Amino acid sequence: MFNTDAENKGGELELQISPTDRLDILLGLSYIDNNVDDAYTTPGGETLDRRAIMTPEINANGVIRYGWPMAGGEMFVQYDFNYLDDHFFQLKNSPVGEQDAYVVSNIRAGYTTADGAWNVTAFVNNVTDEEYKQMVFDLAASPAGGGFGAAEYFYADPQWWGVSVSYNWGN
Image (cartoon, rainbow, N blue to C red; front, side, top):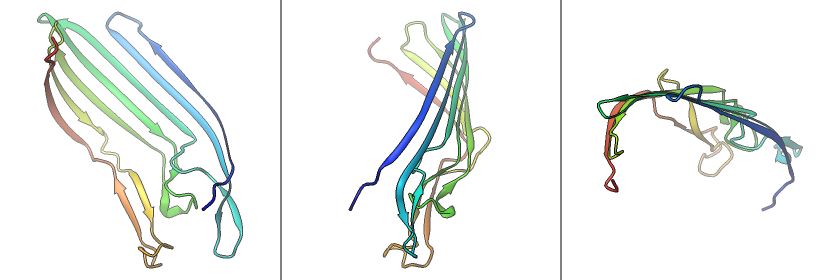
């Protein structure tokens, strides 16, 4: 086993504003440029630089939340999203282990009592029913894959919705 050199450069920017007492907006953006030296050796013996695994070049996220007083507590609505640029799940960066860029967004609405003890929230996660991989195991060259080009794909949850009721015993 060995470890190769890698170079990573990037930055991130976060913005949090509350234009009114009831409205909160949080936005984030990050950029990373990465290169792993001599990360993969082809069957012909050539060593190639590659992108690090699970490292999208651009990542953006945000939350918009609006709350207002109601029946002695607070009612709220919220929208959030996360954008991930294309990325790989294995160091050889083959097409079988690549995930294209995607956006996942969620919405929720709820009520919290004034003392914070009770919270009831209705939600829809993955609003647009985006299909994307959370992990890929490329078994093509491994003994487990038998050399037959096998790959295992693990997909994220599809759109789902529900209601959450919680009670905080500390209040």
